[in-house]
Length: 116
Length: 113
Image (cartoon, rainbow over all chains, first blue to last red; front, side, top):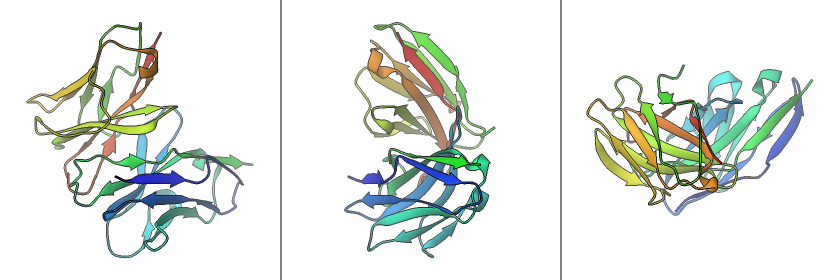
């Protein structure tokens, strides 16, 4: 089984400052890694994903994440946040061998609050 | 608009009742996934269908069931509802079942009173 830990339930950041949202995972098998964003009263939107290859993954809206296998981490970063980035961010993992059929395991989420 | 349509958007019902949530996948997607998002449990995978057949079950209660029809839309049936079933229920669809290439719908908010 897999598990995902998002170390911060809430992260307040000033506008135009950099931000890092932390995600650690646990799995006995190889996994794919994802970050999703959920704006108020909306569904989940994929920000970026790591399937294989380069450990630095670039996503939409200026976000990027780095896969660190030795530390089992997949932290999300943005060099300069905007007020519109205020949302809930979810880290998720899925088994390689599951072929998509196992479903994703999500973390509890991190609420990013951008302060003007 | 993600292309995944869920109806209804909101549903309020009493304990003990049965409801049906509907999901129309994005055009061309054969796979449908159901997830539950609650304050207590967070986002949990419930069940997956691919081209009409059940492929995987997650933390789905026995009181819940789902199916995918020949036109690929899916329904999630929740029966003998309890207060704890109040949650957001998301449907996601994908054409690529090997890499979790999901597109999520905007969800159905179920309130059990």
